[in-house]
Length: 202
Image 1 (spheres, rainbow, N blue to C red):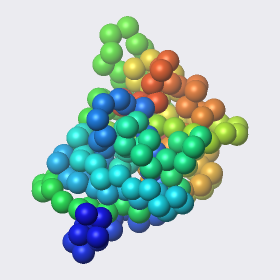
Image 2 (image 1 turned 180 degrees about the vertical axis):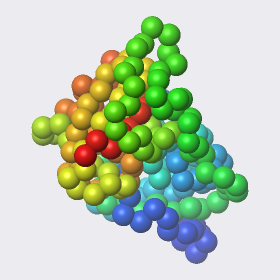
Image 3 (image 1 turned 60 degrees about the vertical axis):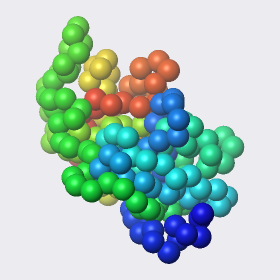
């Protein structure tokens, strides 16, 4: 079956890293690049394992795998695939699934009882989700949008918590937080921030 796909698939999102959303359910993916219904084949080039998944919703990455899909391609103990090949193998016509504003108003949280200060920097990557890389070390981030050295402030609009981090390397997302940075803004048990405000502050 894989050889059949090879003849018709289109390699996309070259250089993207792939991580997991922390969401349960049957193997699936979310994407800010491809519309719902698109079939993507994700291959971990470090171990040769692959998963073919259908985009079921928006995210801030080229492809963000749910837990079941990521489990089929991961290396033990790693929550990030740095060397991934992403191929579009079918489905999905129309606009990308990620739309600006899907994370709610950039300047305020809509969740009752949560007060979020107004933005002080330039709001970027509107509609992006934010997840974690699984990497250790002092709080930091990687980004496929901003160069190394850029300072980004990430606010979780569901709890009002924020982290300001410096981009230290590339990824396939607007911003991908390492474990220490994500821990400061996460909600317990969640590995994905669906309603995030990202600001460039330096």
